[in-house]
Length: 267
Image (tube, rainbow, N blue to C red):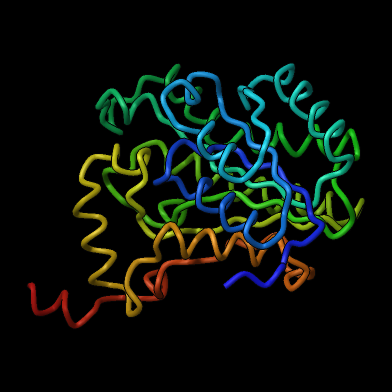
């Protein structure tokens, strides 16, 4: 049941591809809580996905933008400023690895592809914040959230170079969170989500096993995409004004587990 947690707030959501996307569900839930939303994704992702269906459903405008391009980002924020003035929340839900997509093993990376992984999955987050910071486009007590995974802290053998990308993403949240907090009381956090069967997530080798392992090890079970969307809404709301520079786990308790009884029985 909606409670108007985001009534009067205006936000920008990156990365809604289809109905399986966390960004898609976050947009739906934010809209249900009273927010006005601008949607964006890379032109190639827009051709592959269904973002226009989401836009029609929630009454949002869609602006194509490659988040790795400063020209595209400035044009996107021109549109956002024209539409909303300053923003109250932003969600970064972007990640892609050519090495993963093309089956290149971690011990034999293509380094030009690695550069692309970093640029799309992490550096884009810094670029987005830098544009907003320098153009003063966030309202005081605004909230910026990026989605991550705990392979940034622990080794998951099939997660490949995305592990380093997520570690960099989380570092940007801490570092830029300081500067944004000092300047405009804007908070910056990451949400470390359970393995989630999104279109992008299922592209990781062995994903089904990661999902089953997470379910077995987590006392509350894996957090779903809807769970994560609800967490995002909470982080966008005024109830979390003093939370910043944090990596917040939404994983059913997985991150604090050593070994579960179910796993011992399997062994």
